Length: 57
Image 1 (cartoon, rainbow, N blue to C red):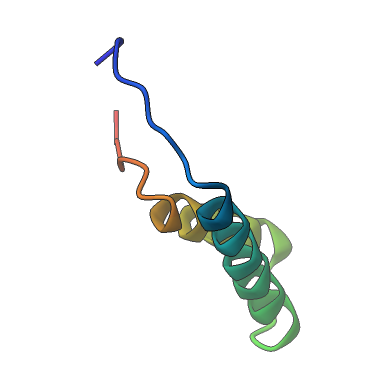
Image 2 (cartoon, rainbow, N blue to C red):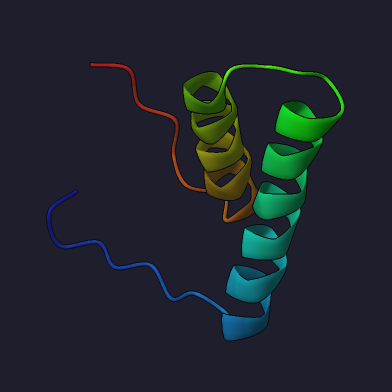
């Protein structure tokens, strides 16, 4: 896996970032979730939007 590279589409990066930010703001403002939890969920949304592999140890 060390030799694998992932080509990312710039449009996809921007869309994933905007969606992640929208989720972050929605959680903080509307749902009154703590900021750190919202940041974590927003980062997961961005990662899933970019189809990054979900690795748990």
